[in-house]
Length: 213
Image 1 (tube, rainbow, N blue to C red):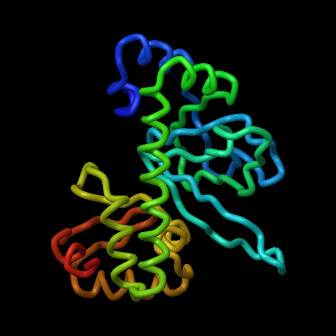
Image 2: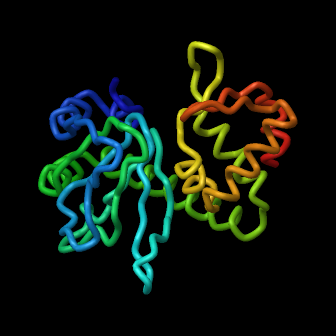
């Protein structure tokens, strides 16, 4: 499937962008990039979730954000001599697109529309980052978890479901696995969700929407 930001480009720019971006699969538990790596490649998430994190003073992992379908990361590739500065870890088996810095420079220099598309993608990333910081500062765990469940739910064989682990949801909601497990139990007691092994069935999405407000 061609991403919207490529599909919206004029014909010639679209053809060049399709040539520049290459698809690949990133497996859960692997790393797409490391902080010290030179940012030579820009990534676009077609499907899945990728956690961006750093290590703190005690080598503890600090999640900065989790990017999903339609998001980019590795934006340092749009600038000269940048390093990624983060670990990028797929939370699930994910489908990504990648483009090298050299190809991106040629693309954006030839087609201003492509440059504008990247500015829009970066603006969306910034807005989501600001929203995440605001939620972490002003919202309790329940609304943050409800929002994460709504963003991660997909149509499954038995209905709407989320196939992320409790730890993955903790990264999305900016909490701990223990707290997420507790709040998931409360939602299950209210019959808003049904818990299973690496699968959460969403029974009452409207209840989650109210809780996320």
